[in-house]
Length: 250
Image 1: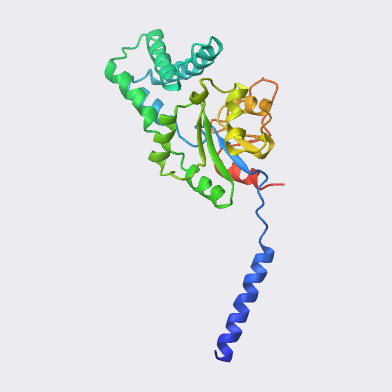
Image 2 (image 1 turned 45 degrees about the horizontal axis):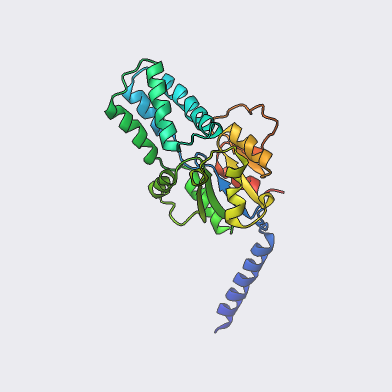
């Protein structure tokens, strides 16, 4: 090795050591993150399709459909007459169309339901998830969706291998915000609930997760008002890049 090469190598090593000292340590505040489905999977194409199939009425249909979708799940759970996410979603669609006097043919019904199996990730979700996983954070889905729906979303988004656990509340025949549904994450990860950040899409889910005892982040993509349910998320933001900042803050 000549003198010039040695000096250049020594200088490069010194610069690398300086950069390593200057770089802030990335120590996550949580060992794991459990995600609801919709902070990751973008449901908007379903409602765009509703407008395409029912011009000028799609927004009204979507609004009523979404409201009944979750109401039917909770009513089913409370009355102990469980039906899974797909079944309650289809029942809600039929009701909403009938209430609005829209001609829901079998073909349109099938198209709208199948759209839930074609969902893909929001643009910010894939890079954020890959970065979180690279930083050693354990990841899971914890959703009211069926396992079929979650697996389809993972495949559609190229997220195979990203999640350590894919948890559907269908496995225990209930829905969030039942505490038993949230308990699936500590059981699966084998760690305390305080070590798991829950990432919610809906305000009611953020309140439910916080009530259960999760540190909670509300991915409030629609800029909704907080629910008046006695519990607020620890923080909120519009996308997963903001969630990343929260994970490494403090």
